[in-house]
Length: 232
Image 1 (cartoon, one colour):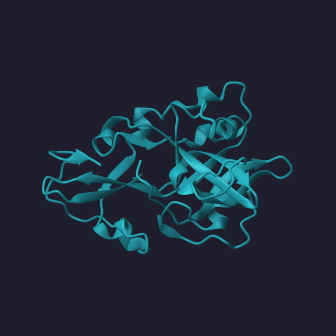
Image 2 (image 1 turned 30 degrees about the horizontal axis):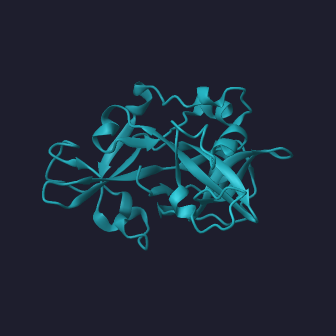
């Protein structure tokens, strides 16, 4: 999974969708081009307040780290090793979260050597929830997104994808679990079939660019995703 996604819903909308208390204090705004270490919404469980909508920085910093300098390298945690990794095992066991998103970006190498970005998003415009884990480092709340092997047509764009949590699994992902590894199954193929693989323009490749134009469909020479293209 490449390190960009979009999250544009307001805190009020997310708080209602995820039935969570909003503790963001007006710190959230729409972002069509989230990059590593950006502040974004996440939904977690607080022992006092229950389910809460918080602002977290993308790139987990383990509580024992001496600095936050390596956070950009820890935006994703592999589902296959998250339970045994020194950095991720404790958050996975005790501090799982949901990361709201409109969709995410991947790049495919074209035959001419260029790279074509794609935006993967629900066809019906519904919210996505990435499986996440969070940690506190000093005053920072930080998180990683879990990734897993891509399934179905998504594998034509990239061999990895975020671990997506369908609405009916939200409670299970956030709740304490004797065997959290059982939560790592990807959504069923029928659910994933509801995702659109949309070609978009190259502007998303620059983190300084933002706005709804980044997610608009553009024409590409090859209509079939993955045809004579190379995963990037």
